Image (tube, rainbow, N blue to C red; front, side):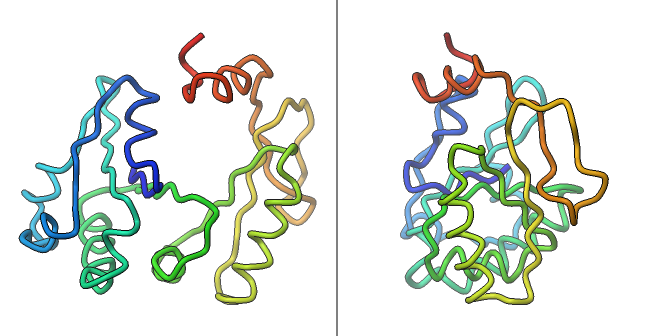
Length: 172
């Protein structure tokens, strides 16, 4: 999992871990095609989940072209990579979306207007990107196909409240 939020390390923090500091100057000194560099930057949760934390701003300058190298290295070294980004639509996010094999837009029904705005922004900037909508909501029914609406993943109310209150679905 790659945390590309401006509040770097929130995913690691939600899992009870502390993200290492990364900066553009530190990453410029690294060969982002080297799996050993990737391993040194990776946190490993006891569950086996591997987490990388980068503020997307580190890729907005001289490292912009490194996005492609990093994504290729992740493709080569992992069967499945989940890149978690905020809904701000910067050049870095556009480049990542253009390079992605599949794009999921995960939201909660309470944020329907924001989800619609993100869908429109992606469609305008990258019409070739197909979004797979995933809704985190309490539900007992699922659409018969993706054309009937977003895929729904059960999300108990208490879990969402804990996330809103503490920043982690695992903390009371």
